Length: 265
Ligand SMILES: [Zn+2]
Picture 1 (cartoon, rainbow, N blue to C red):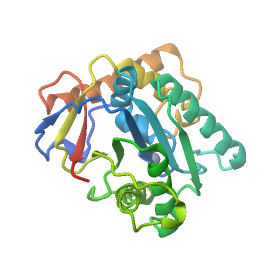
Picture 2 (cartoon, rainbow, N blue to C red; picture 1 turned 30 degrees about the vertical axis):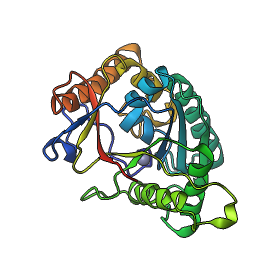
Picture 3 (cartoon, protein in one colour; picture 1 turned 120 degrees about the vertical axis):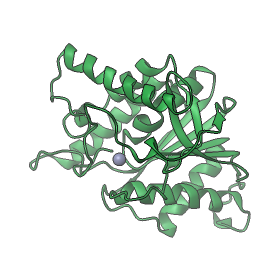
């Protein structure tokens, strides 16, 4: 999330497209050695897969995060200093990753927020990082999600799928002089038709704590006051926990994050 055109996180029940479609047939991947989560903006990865990444990190997985854009539209203040905003959002992303326990790389591609293209240049950037970081599992936005408006989320999804193809095949990008790398599994979040659940029981508070690192997004994305009080933050935690509970109910779990799982990459 996190540009000005994002809808804030609702305070009531969630209304995601994944509530009524899809059938969960897969639970809990073995904890990968290395995972790479690819998001359009700072906070997208945490919003959609934060509890899963916290669980894996606690189990010894080296979690890396790649953020495609600079987050420079993530404010409602028309007079904001955008250079400062970009720096703030990068610092928040580092702090959030620390709270998740992510000890891998944090990569910022720096494309202008709202103007991300799934072009060859950006695909090469993603493929380069896949070859360098050699993740077993990659997570990213579902580019096939129907009726999605935000182009950065759609294009970050395409960069994830297309970046994997470019990273794995030896005749792609020989000029990189990097060994091709084929991940084992792709998990798409915000999935149109989720079929995989990660049990997130016990990691609800870690997810909330990681999200609370994105202070600049309290008003625009989290539906919180700029300076929240303890009751506001308690309500926010309850909201996040409720979302995990509702997703878990689709998978006969008390708490879960849901994904479209693609193997045999
Ligand atoms: Zn976003």
